[in-house]
Amino acid sequence: MLKCTALPHPSLLWLCFFIFNFSFFISSAFADDWPMEGKNPLHHAISTDALAPPLKLAWTFAAGDSITASPVVKDGIVYAGSYDAKFYAVDAQTGKELWHFKLDTEMIFWAPAAVDSGIVVVGGGDGFIYARNAKTGDPIWQVRTDGMISGGGTIVGDTVYVGSWDNNVLALDLKTGREKWRYFTNWYVQTAPVVDAAKHVLYTNAHDHMGYAIDVLNGSLIWKQRVTFQVGYPNNGPPCLDGDRLFMAVHPAHFLCAEAASGKRIWHAETGANVSGCTVIDGKIITGTREGLTAFNAADGKEIWKFAEKAGVSRCTPAVAGNAVYFCSRNGKVYALNLDDGAKLWEHATGGPIDGSPAIAGGRLYVTSCDGKLYCFSP
Image (cartoon, rainbow, N blue to C red; front, side, top):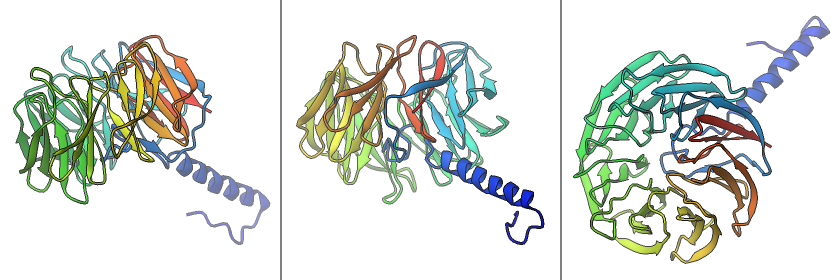
C-alpha cells in the first residue's frame, strides 16, 4: 500500500493524493449496490443515494432483442438477460459491454440475476440456473431444473434461493451449486423469494394460490395459506417483508398484508393489478395498479395517494431514493413520483413496454425495456 509520509518529491505527493481520492471515488460510487431483485433479501427496494429528479439520459446499451428482466448492479457492473438468449454484463459508467454468454437453445432470459462474492447467478428459460464469474463471465457451475426460471435468485450468505416452474424452491450453495434442500409446491414458482435471515424463514408464493413460509435451515414447511381471492387466478407478485408483516400483490386485483408468523390475513385492498411487486417505506406500502401506482397505509390498507396513468404496472417493484419513488410502466415510461403525495416529478419514454423493475446504484438509475435497450439515467 502506498504511504503518503516522507516522500522525497512533490510529484509523488500529487500521485498519492490522486490515488487516495480516486480510490475514495470508486468505493463511494459503488457503495450502494443493487445486487438482486428488490435490492436485498427482504425486498426493501430503497437506495441510500439521494437521487433527485429530473434525470438525464447518460447512455443506452442495445441487446439483440427485448429485455424484460430487471437489471441488477454490483461493483460497477450492470447485469441483464435478453430475449436474444444472451446474458449481458455492462459497464455501469460507460454502457460498454464487458462480456456475455448465450444459451444453447433459443429460449430467453426472463429472470433477474443475483450477485455476491464475485459470482453472478441467473436462471434461464431453458430451466438451468447458471453461476458465472461476475467480472469475466467464466462458468462456475450450472444446475438443471425441470422448468423455466422467471424469478430472480435471493442470496443470503453462502446460499442462493431460487424458484422454478418445476414447482420447486431450491436452496443451492453459492460457490458450488450443491443442492442443500428443495421444497415442492403444487404449482410453479415464478418470483424471487423473500428471506428473513435473522429468523431463518423464506417466504414465497406459487401458482397454486398459496403463500409459503419455509425454514431455510432444512427446507421444512412452517406454514402455507391461500392468498388468492378467486379460483383459477394464480398469484405471482414478488412479496416483501417488513418486521412481522408480509406484503404481496395477488390475483385478481388485490393487495394483501399477512402475519409473517402465521400467514393469517391482516388486511387486503383492491388495486386493479395482478403481478406488481411492492416497496414499504415510512409507513407506506407502494405497489402497481392497473393504471399507475398506489400508496397504502401499511398498518390498515387505507389508500394514501394514487398516481393514475392509462397503462398498467406489470412486474415492476417500485424503487425509492430520497423523497422520490421510481417505477416503470407498460406504456414504456419510467417515472419519478413524490413519496409524500404521488405527484409526478419526472418521466422518460423508452421505445417499448417495460416489464422489469428499476435499479439504483452509484447515484444512477437503470431500467430495461422491451425495445431491447438498457437505459442509464444520471442527475
